[in-house]
Length: 329
View 1 (cartoon, rainbow, N blue to C red):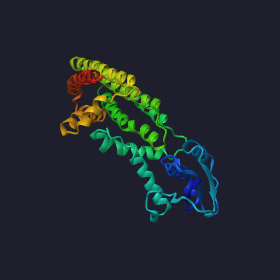
View 2 (cartoon, helix red, strand yellow):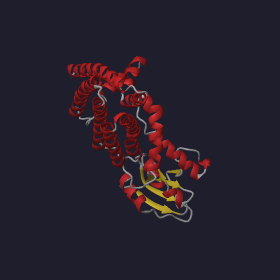
View 3 (tube, helix red, strand yellow):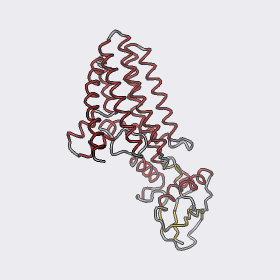
View 4 (cartoon, rainbow, N blue to C red):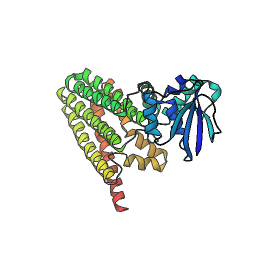
């Protein structure tokens, strides 16, 4: 029977939350990646008794692994690691090492398909929010999804009821939703709670928020007497809904759950700068940021005309991509 010893400086550090999971449970999960490990001792000077959260996370993350707390090295172990930061510099000290471990876990939750705005603006903000939410033991990814839904409702209300100032508030809330969109996924990946159901709900929430913003902004302009821009926005919305539905249905039929990334993934896979630029400017993060800038500059009508033109080109690409995919089957 292979066993591992995880060493903590104190009971406090063993129980400390690292990206939402007690450090002892995360370290045990880390050690259990070696399939030969069947037992894990947690060494804390003076002994250690895991709390209820640790017990629950051990059962979820390392089911079947024998865990016990010890006060000294009682036998020879297959491997010994410092529980404060298994892959880091033990000289940092427990608190600094735990903080570094926490940042490293959240940094690893980024997605390779992130757009340029998301990578440089949205992710730093969403990680800061995730880091604080993960200090609350009961927080789950679905709670962040609910917040995004609330932001979408508030955004829609502002657009429909607020006139020119409502358009500004709605655009700002759309950008806030775009920033906060990463939180549920970060929490899920950091705490090993990803699921096809959660990813589908996240994708559907994103799509509904996008539709609500375009439809709400079109209604806002129509109520202010800017009918032509409103009709352009509605035309763009119809094309966006059609393309999104086609992408979602295709992904679902292929067994990947409901997502809308087929075109984005294909373009990014080309690796050329032109393909990346085209992908970036048609992604939600860029569109949300551009919408805020244009609405704040008093160019909401121009924003909808531009949106309609971009979506028309995007829909052509979607149809061509899906047709190519069917032809190669």
